[in-house]
Length: 523
Image 1 (cartoon, rainbow, N blue to C red):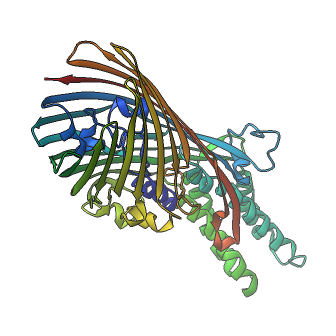
Image 2 (image 1 turned 30 degrees about the vertical axis):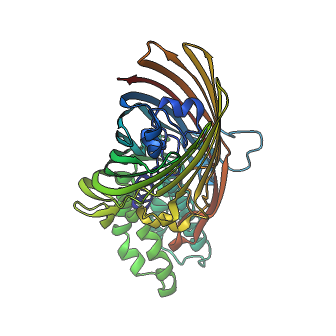
Image 3 (image 1 turned 180 degrees about the horizontal axis):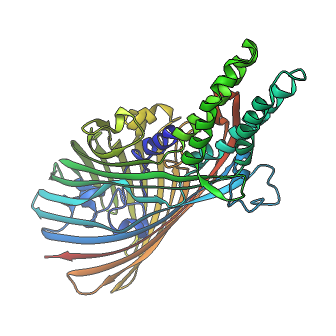
């Protein structure tokens, strides 16, 4: 059970972004992005992030923007593992196609408020800009019923008890008549019966993680000539992560038909096994060597079914430069930016660590990089009231340092292809929409119970309301459609000492939607 708690928390230390972007980066920083998506050639206030070099092609003066997003995400795992049938709460087949006991574990990732503040000042050939927002992290992820890998190892307990009971019964059956005294026979029955009765389990488990990378970006843009400009800036990032989880109150069924506290139940059996040592010592040597490991198992189960808890906070700081270029010619604008990798190592502040692993020890440091990003885009004014845009983002995730070296399991980096159009329908109304196609290089080895991600297609739409000449209100909505990822595991849970190694499979599914509101103001 320690191992499963550890695996879940290692996964949490690389929780996927709940917003738009790659596996770890967040690029959804303005309502204009959600309502048209292709923003890498923007000349609006959101260019402060998406195309800072283009700010010198805007009118002189101050511009400000305040935005907030609400992210709602579902992360579900449908796991198939035969021992789940031993659950006291198992209600039967999950579907008509089910051939192995299957359970659904539902997770929610929410970020009710994701704020961003942008500001820029342009004068002549120079523009200065700043952005404060959340540039990475997955918000808060919560699995209130635990995870498949948590429960799988608990479900293995009845599998072990039944194997022990069968093995002990078989050993006795092979003995010649009279080999065991009546006292020994009664002792073995007293051992086997409660072990055999432990054929159901229940468990209370939960895992929650909160992960944010807050950032402050600032820089300057310069117009090189009539058509070309450049940007140089940097971003200071602060990573803040908290992880809490437990596996507790493991219970097993007893001969009386009720559920019992597993450590106490198996502890009592272990005491009885200890008392039987004089009987075991009088057995033939060959039989004694077979019986002793079996008698030791209840004591082991009493220890492994004890409550486990972890509570860790991680913080760290990183700094990365950002460069950009912009080309402007009549109705055509082309922008590009490159965000260098932000190297971050977070430090643990640990209150509880029953995983027993040094990675979560108080004061230990863990990799928490933000990958480098290349973003390019082009926009073209087809008509005075109609503009079309395309963008491309490449996230260099294989070159970033992740917790547990998860970057080494990736098949490739994430690529995004974005298309958008905006129509100035009325003097006071802009309408826009866009499509984002995201292709991620995840593999079976990369996917885990907490950190799983898939390729997706997202659709955004929204409106801009010109409240006054200086103020514009933006309202936007984006929904993402993910393909399921099925992962088969040859050894889902095992007890090598008893020769138990059982396969399992998991189907990962996600749903994501984001609402955004923003106010832009020009002085």
